Image 1 (tube, helix red, strand yellow):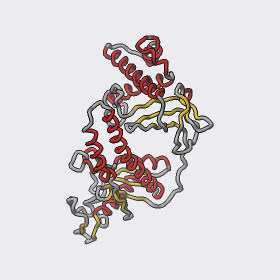
Image 2: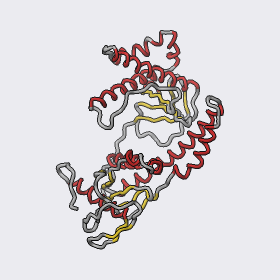
Image 3: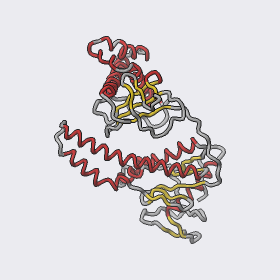
Image 4: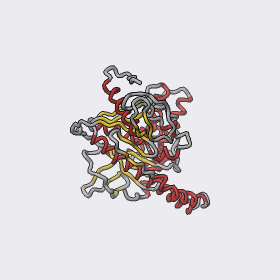
Length: 371
């Protein structure tokens, strides 16, 4: 999207204030031991607030923006309680925090009565007007809502919620195991090697110079603000390139294979070591998440193999466990059958075998492969 007007900046600010007011109202009610309904919160921070001199300027933006900000606060608060009680699956999340005008990401959300797509392909936003959009693709159906996002680099994005009907890809006979690493990003069980692009490492010098320039500027000055934007844009370029690369390779793997098996890596644990910068640069978590989502979307099978499975110690030919090996050992010979293994290709083949065993286990329990 192109740069928006001051009316859009006003919408961001009002949504932020309503979100904070709604969060504060819920916190005060909880501290006082009083139950407060969603309707009461919305009435207090939107309807009644507009009538006060301190919040009269809320009437200058579309009411749908304020209502959705109130709903976002409700969802954040309930997600926190569901996480504490165990009702919400996944890792524990902390209490919702207040939004700041200095946050790197500003966003508003509008439902159908707050936006429309005009015949001239421009996006109309209530009380803002028509906005020119650089469309990345055609919308598959009528959107039900849209989120307008401003990132740290000052770029604006419109993210639409649409209903899609994904058709499964034609079935194929190939299955693949993937061993993720740092020297090579991924080695497939069929011997194919995907080299690591190292986007951050290649841009590290430019990023360092931009950060040094920012550190020399007086805090709060206009030059400091300009330097901060340059740093954010440099990081955005690296992030966008990494995401685009991961999308292309994950799509190719899902399209070419009926089943995809990867090791369930503990990325957070590895990221605490001296390899942290390289691990974050590789983006293993993002890549495996894309594989899982696309496999589910296109009717493919995706399986994560137990992280404690000794894929690098096991001979893929005879099944003998030769014990742990330092990372410097890239080629080794099995003491049982004498086969010479490439470390990564052998690990990928073992992951493929373990993934197939997991997939065929009718009980859904972990399979103990023969050592």
